[in-house]
Image (cartoon, rainbow, N blue to C red; front, side):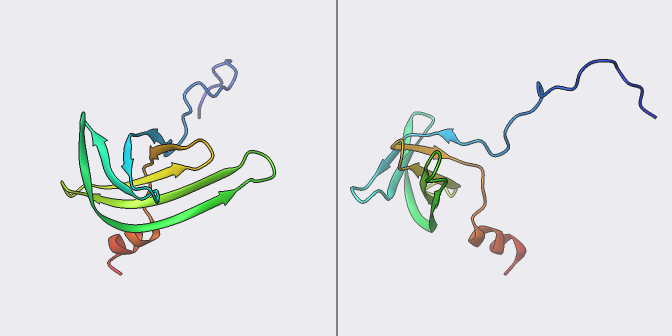
Length: 106
C-alpha cells in the first residue's frame, strides 16, 4: 500500500518522448540531405534508406515535414526531418517502418 503524500500531483517530471533536436543539414537544392553537422564537422550522407512526408493539422497549426532515414559515412543511421513550415532541420529518435522491419528480421 502507498501512503498519500499530501502533495498535489504535477507534471514537473514529465518530458516529451522522442523530442526533435535541431540539427544543421547541408541539403541539395531539391531538399535532400547531403551532410549532417556532427561535433563541428559535416559528415556526408552515403545513403537515403527511406523517406516519407507528413501533412497534418492544416486547420489549426500546420505540420508539414519531409522525413529521411539516412546513413552517414561513419555508418550511423539518423532520422532527420525538414520542417517545411519553419524551414528548419531536426533529428528525431525514431525508427522508420523499413528499420522496424529490419530489426524484426523481415
